[in-house]
Image 1: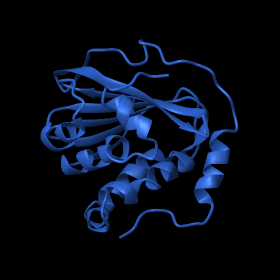
Image 2 (image 1 turned 30 degrees about the vertical axis):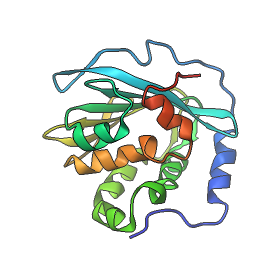
Image 3 (image 1 turned 135 degrees about the horizontal axis):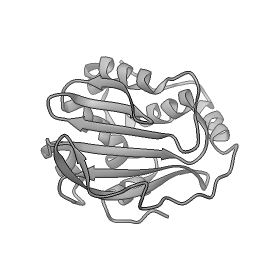
Length: 196
């Protein structure tokens, strides 16, 4: 089952929407504090990165893990403890456009067989982001992994979904630290770069 959008020019339209407003705000240490406590475990900020489209800043992201590392495979395949990917929107983005930008990266990171296995998980994940409105500038989306619960998606501190199992979370991380659409995302989140 392929969940990637195949409409010609859809990504281009999304990009135009994403660059419709300007914002020069910089991420502060207060927005990505460390350490944080998640599930009773102290997590450190592994790295930060900025997602941009045509040079225009869309969101900042920070990845939290128990022990900092630049080894993405270790985080995705061997670290079974709590983790957090935190995203802060730097401009208003329609929730469906935000979801579509994530969908556009599925084929680069998940095989058709994996997409079929995770079809229900992905549907729940995208539904959690579809809140019928824009994700306003400053919106915080956190995607946590909690042992015993699974993937916990929150928007501005409100739980939107709990998706069981650990395999899905680690597959989802590939979109940012596997083969992301923007290579600097992986570089920054693995601690090899700094937020700009």
